[in-house]
Amino acid sequence: MSKQSRKFRVPDDLANLYDFANSLDVRHFTHFGVQHPQSDALSGPKELGGWLAEHGMGEGGEKITPAMFQTALRLRGALRAYLQCEPTERRRDRDVLSALGGALEPFPLRVEIRAGRGATLSAVRQDALAGLSAIAIELHDGTLTGTLDRLKMCASEECRRVFYDRSKPSTRRWCMSTLCGNRMKTRAYRERQREAK
View 1 (cartoon, helix red, strand yellow):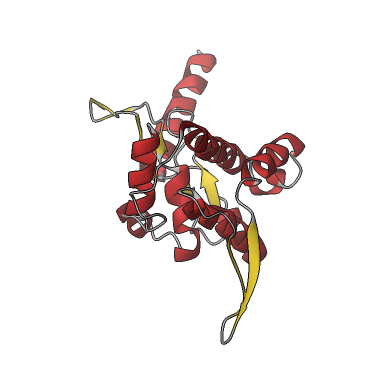
View 2 (cartoon, rainbow, N blue to C red):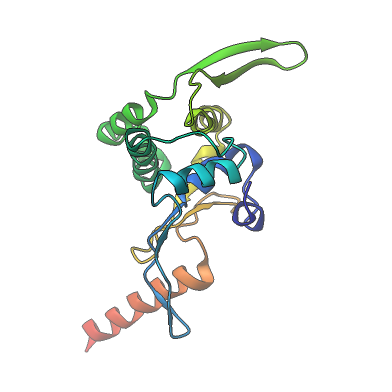
């Protein structure tokens, strides 16, 4: 769990998924006159290894090959495309589901029965990317509990940050209504004013 997932009170059982999706920061807005810098925490195999170790999903010394790196980026891209869809649309969009299913194939899981814990899922993969199986597990568990529907992507084209919707009706559209929401509403208001003239 990262500082960000703690700050925004993302449930522990979705924290790795949240952090992984947000390892790519494509925000490109100006706030109080300062341009937000875009970044990618997974800019190369070495950075991916560091990210996995930092999140308790790897040892940090295992070699990540270029092919493994591309596998991780494919998973992140498919996950972000999935989270960009409205929760009801996610279950119907065959292209998005197919892409996510394909990106998850390299991360097979097995069911383990343990005393006192019942059935749990664990990684079959044994290499440097085995830790990313936690993303597949969180997707599975979040789907069963319904909490995955609360993980969404900000509707602002200038943001696209993944956030956890804590609103009671689960209808939030922006990661922060005071920033992205306010910016979008102000822009829509100005557009209506121009059209009215």
